[in-house]
Length: 517
Image 1: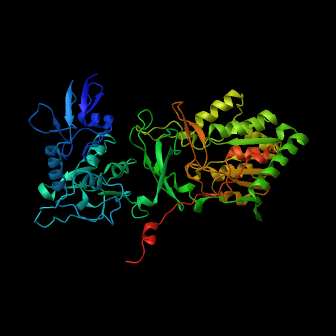
Image 2: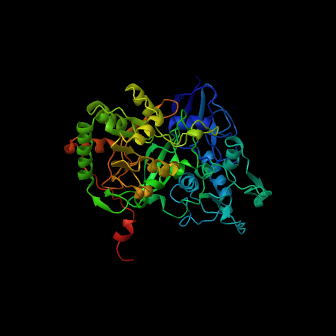
Image 3: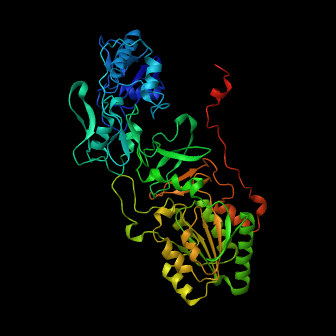
């Protein structure tokens, strides 16, 4: 393990560690654009300049390995001057449109300029004006004049997706990023190029101009789009969620996530949610208080068990909820009420084992493994065929469905609703409204559920790796977690407290408080 000194700090690093990685480990700032820990070294931006004791020339930190006893610094006037001139070079043709740029607030160029730049530009020539608002593909937009040709996006499509849609075309100051004819940037990981673009040249069509980043808060959670369980950061304010971006976890998703996973925030926003409990049939629905609805459902289930036996009640579970939620409903329904008719709703069995070779899996549920572990532990191994047989026989009087949070990945929703249509009493718990329930002929209750960003919980991914998350924000007051719904059904109302949606400062209140100009 070689030892080195970085800006006066002595550290020990693994053999093969580059100087820029040593700076990161030492917690020292170092200017850089083209280097990314998940990509190969390009060494094209020339900003990570360092001075190595005993070496007469400055070196780039991204492509120089740490040697035993090396003393490195980027604090000398010689290094600062080199970085300053490097920044001047990158800004020769870069527009000064920071107030309108979608990257403002999280732009590497702004950050590096404030750290190492702050100079009077000496460029006398007119800027080369390149193309704006170039559609690289269905999800990514390029503003060519902001691009500094760091080549991160090109290397990403070469090395990670291996789709090679992007290239650097032309020469000299006419060089620009582009796609080949009839071959747009259209792979399921294309939005990672936006994440790694350090200057706002590549922007997401979905997020572009929808919010300024300084009006958003963020917290870490996991992606519930499939059984991989990518680590992500969710960005939100009082209007709801606006995007999710990947967080590095070497054991699960590395630095990346798929484009389909980035859509998971949409179904969690208030405009798509079931906001209150409902009771009725196809002819008439009444909005009711969620607490009262859950209590009455609990009484109906208990009465059915007491009157017609445990065989009169069946429960359908999806793989979209947390371990704690499965434990709660199974303890109540199987432990307390002795109901053993518990069934697993598999949404796309024919594609369940598919894998795209990077991250996306055919099992579009975050916790199938956690659910199956709990069913096995209680020996609840009833088949779906058994459920259909008992429905046809008319022995099931009450069905409780803990439906999907994300209805978009359950294409068989209508088929399943029709299957239980005709049962005397149906309790359907879900985060979003289910239009197919308007065909129900029996008495039906709809209980609004919280989404993955509104509740704590543990999810087990396809590897068997358990990940625990905390709530990010609260968006619908009357929504319950399955744990809370079960507590109400079991007569433990005192444990449940409805949470008001969060309100965060969205406007720039400093503008309003600074007085007349």
